[in-house]
Length: 334
Image 1 (cartoon, rainbow, N blue to C red):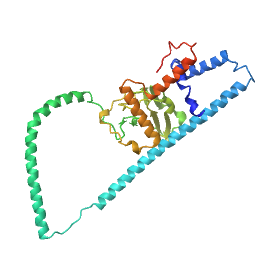
Image 2 (cartoon, rainbow, N blue to C red):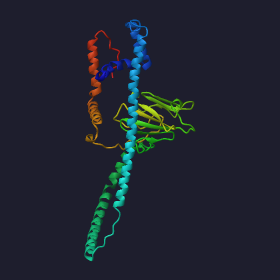
Image 3 (cartoon, rainbow, N blue to C red):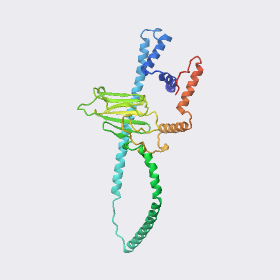
Image 4 (cartoon, helix red, strand yellow):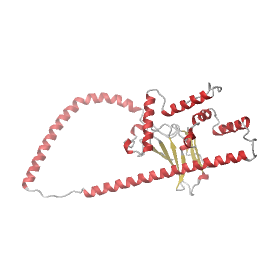
């Protein structure tokens, strides 16, 4: 299909939002339409419809599995590159410390006298600055004390919150999680005496909830997510037969999560340390995504539709114009 593959996404999304039963109910509605309004099941060879469905499923299943594997490989490569960069920086720092070691140099009497004179002058200047600074501090002390009351009130709500770990997440008793603005990663270890496999675990990722655990045991994580995720772009795998790692793709890529599920302790997102980068340092695809996010953020701040919302509105308006006989009064548009 190429670029036309997403042509009907907005229309199908409207339909999907009206099916509280999820994908199963949506698929059932689609086949009901084919049965009632077309000769799909009876218009040709008896086995032709089944073959068509199986062929389509096989085609899209292969594409989905391929995309899933590519995503996993990309994550593994990124993790490996990050570790290599850290090792390289550590080695460079070690070499720098070795190269910049103390050196002993003998001075002449004249050089020593000149050096001592400069040191005495510098010491005198520092003493004068110290006196001036103490005077200024004493005059500003009352103002700072007054300001500290309001700052204390602002920080009151952050008391008791966890400090983020090195990767802007939290190290909890039963699992560890990290995050960037666009994604969240979880590592759930299991203390068992055997190598766990896919059939041994329960991992259920929904748009607003998640469950992770070992079959036959209470789940380690089970609850409502902090915010919505893209289920089709999220994934999980088993690492070393002992750890289940889960990757979640955020829908809102402009916020930091304070926790994974609503029952977890919160981290203080004010202490999150994002990695700074320039647009010129990013690859074309990432740069385009960041620029789109910045545009959408400006649109939201002005109360205007984002680029995606505008695209959906244009498609829906065109569809409604082409089908005036259909009633859209009860449809939910988003």
